[in-house]
Every structure is written in structure tokens, then in C-alpha cells.
Length: 144
Image 1 (spheres, rainbow, N blue to C red):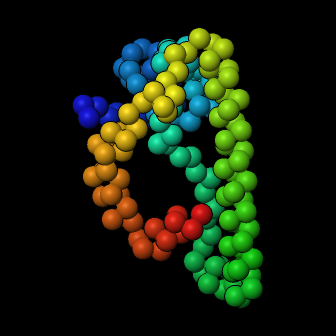
Image 2 (tube, rainbow, N blue to C red):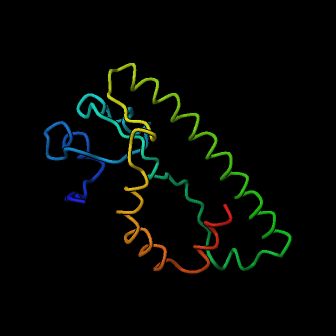
């Protein structure tokens, strides 16, 4: 697609944008505000291709030591927490978008973007990632 990705430590992120070393970025809308990115990047495309994650991790030994009822309760709690996190993120995005628009950013909404072309162009990358993911992980994502 013509991009040259740059990996940047979060500690250097704002300076890299302010200096022009990074001329585009993908981030949740709240990160744009938290880092003050809207002061430097005045254009925003709402592609919805980025998904934030709140990670829950546990040791295999601990997990495997749970009884069936405990595992089922844990899985139910994880699913409910995931649904809640999605709702919270959606609400935060809506609030952040209002602030960004009020700050004068030029916003392209999904209907103004060739998302079908974007998905087609990125299909090989997305499919490659899914193909490399463990089956259990793929199944977990399809059920959430």
C-alpha cells in the first residue's frame, strides 16, 4: 500500500509525530487525545480496522487446576467483561470523536472511504495472520 511502517517506543511517540519523523499513525481515538496527536495530525479516517485489547492472562497450571464449574464461570466472566469493554470503548470513541471534531480535525467517515477496497488490499496480510494463529485462539476470537 506504499506505507513504510516505523516501530516507535511509546515514550518517543509524541516527539516522533511532532518532529514529522512519523507522518501517519493508527491509534484508538482516545490515544490521539491522550498523546495530543490531534495537534499534529489534522486528518482522521474512521476505518475501524484497529481493535484495542484488554489482556487477561493466567498461568496454565493455575487454569488447569480449576474445576469444570470454575472454568465455565471464568469463561462467562471473560465474555461479559469483553462485552462491557467493547461498550465502554465504543462510548469513549464517540466522546473522543466529538472532541477531535471540535478541535477542527478533518474526519472521513466509513461511507466516505473505500473500505471494501481497503479490505481487499489488506486481505493477504489479515489472512496470513489468521492462518498463523493457533486454532484455539482463532476459535476464541470467533466466539467473542
